[in-house]
Image 1: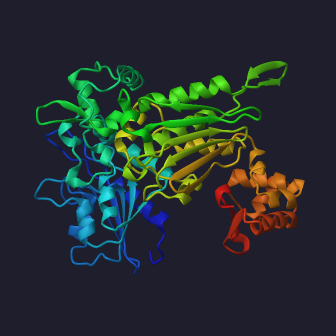
Image 2 (image 1 turned 90 degrees about the vertical axis):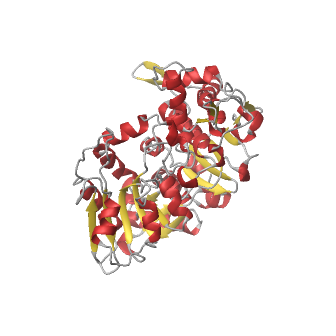
Image 3 (image 1 turned 60 degrees about the horizontal axis):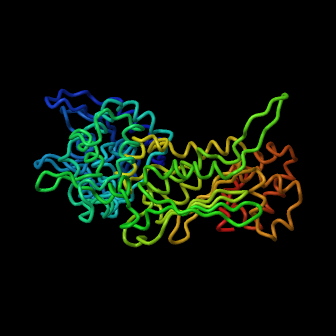
Length: 498
């Protein structure tokens, strides 16, 4: 394969994953199915899968030690369907360290290790050691997860307190540490009961099994006296008054109606309760107009509440809680045209604003304790498929949600009406664009990326008219042009950069 084709190499790794050999284990643990592919600049491709030569051997071990032991790997690229491990028995080198020692510069990873006590740490080890880590696209996750259903279920259900200590000193946040200022009984009873009910946990909240479950999530740690003590993430999620210690755990809400003074509210309390409180506040204050069709009436939401909930949860779960942003709170602002959510901290590698803007961002564990907790409580779609909610807005004819990063905030803008895209055009664009071009801009805003042929078909205009509109958008700085000839595409520039 002389041409470097990531899509084809990812597909090879998945095909290799399906060849993994089931192994017998006395401890009852289900091993994962994993495929690994190494590509060299001369076109050589070397593949391996778990237990290919010997029962229990990891795919990366097989490809490095059994097939490529005598070959330099510093110019090679690795594709692996599962995040490389960071902890193995003392006599074995973890795969993440093996990759670093081989001086590999780039690694593509499928799904993260699903155990919340480990999730993202192998990936983080590589990033900290200056390896360029990239991720498989979301559409490939389902096949990897389906092949590993039993492994994933067992890993996420395992309540092994000993595994809650981050391995090898690789921490993703200082909030993984114990909070010494909060007592063992410092969690809100209402928040714990809400979580127990939504996560469908049978054990009582004060039982050893329930506490072990919270420890497995990284919300509690066991001290030297055998007591369960809250971590900082535990206090954020379930604390009686988390904002007293961490002001950044506050959500500031504002509703701007077409007329009158804005209404504001400060949301305090355990993070697991905030999304429901915020949505209830919005529903009580925003109009829900009646739609009339075929002689009947029904209430129509004036706001995409499912997408708003997802945006709020993402802002809470994925924000940077560490010192650089310890005074920066999360913001929610609703206007007649938009819903704007601001969360502190730049996107965590290997995610990026560009991937977010294209609605192709992959899950990256910055705060796995919160991520796992909210997923268990069914407060989010799940760690792999959250972008589907935002893509559904586009399918419904609304402008594509936009992302931007302006220190210190990642800002997500959701549009409430198709016409909202025109309202946010710069004044010079509003003046210059005719009515047809403005309607075309609504189409452009919903697609995000479009060719002149697709534009002409969507607008039902001639090819010349389509090209004229798109070139005007480009001249006004509303879109960028990519490619040449028939392959030319025009990509939306987020409003904050226009």
